[in-house]
Image (cartoon, rainbow, N blue to C red):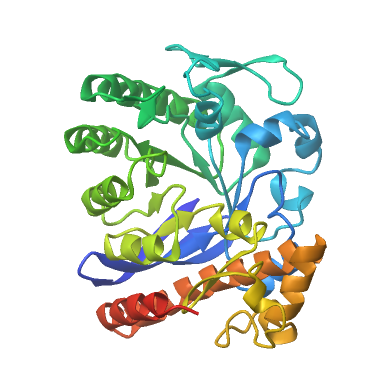
Length: 379
């Protein structure tokens, strides 16, 4: 089940409400990433307290560990990882893409699917659109993604040509049809999204989009960005594609990105975002704040009594000083990345809450200007 209500628009920016089998999601929103069935270092209770309404799980990694038999025994991921709200799972295509290596030889793609060696134990595995749908049906995610080929920006220093991107995009379209057929055969009660591909070539993006719209899927994603291309190229595709998707269906920008990317993505018509950046950066002492980014390992924070962000209400900012987090980082204490992850995720979720409020109050343009000025100010 999926129902999407478009509540308000400001130019291309959209305020919406997404109803799924496990609850309601106010959009635009950010989805914390839980690769192995957990958002690293953060309790589900903490995610609920900071306002997360939907999180992401990883089909590829959960297929390998703990395996489908274990998850099936719990009736799906929600009970297995004690997450009561909606969940989206990716298809595994991005992880297979990442196995290619610098020379692009780490996996073998054919019309039928992708053969590769398990990064866990070396077993030879074969992922097809049908297998991806079967895995995601066991996971019982509210939103499943079609299997696609993530078109690389370059391989071994060679920029992907338009002809090469077309071959990849058309393969993803055929896989979308197979994903849809298998999803229906399995009588999966959730929703399946298609993924627009086409590399950095706008005509290919438009061809991919048009063909996917013909399938009349419940929602659509923009894939194949943030895969090594220059930032201006990513922003060009982000500005080109979202508003061309059906207005009455949710739009998801995959794997993006910085706070600035999120706000610009909203301005381009995106409803859903995900990225590992808040938690990955947190594990490296990189914190996001209203007034720019902060490197907590820097010596200047050694005796700083301020919280990470004086405007933030997260647990880390309410209880602890920069000096304390600096100390934890320097000592290698596990509490350091835990608190940093709580702060970064709270910042992202609160940013999207402020975006929604600005859209509700018809002041998104002013919010966007103030956001950019605040972030440029620096901590």
